Image 1: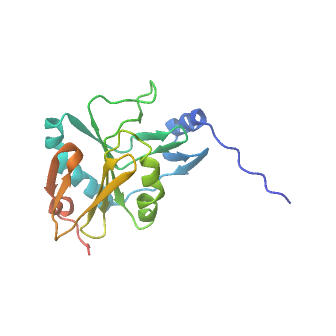
Image 2: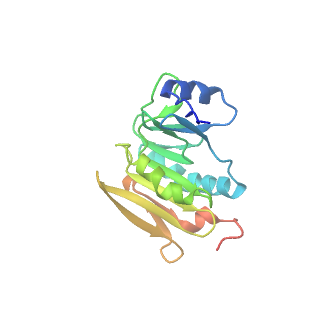
Length: 190
């Protein structure tokens, strides 16, 4: 018995399906992958992040966009980051205004099941975005934030913020905030 490969979706087919779906999916080279439901802890951390940067963003000419708002990294890759920051005018993929193509900062909260992917393959896909200048990974299990800052097209510097280095700096937008603000009131951290 020979196995037939699943038919690949086009970008247009994916967008048509995802726009009417009850559960959103990311898109990679013709295949749809449902996004994982988030935990309360995950949601609280993103809310705390948004609160820590909200007032400072406007002063920098930027705006924060919580998920789910789709990002197109390339014609064959679409993602739903946890949070994204746009500076200047939003560039959208089409008239539906539900797919951004120019985020300056992307933020993901790490879960045990996605941490390796977020650090590896997903980051390599996000790096295809010429507008992206910082990629922020926030742990939901320990007080730790990793910020990858673009230095050139092929070089990214990593800064790790933890209780020893407790002021998180987002250099691309000139914003900093206390690491403790992200984890305020969240129990069970290492």
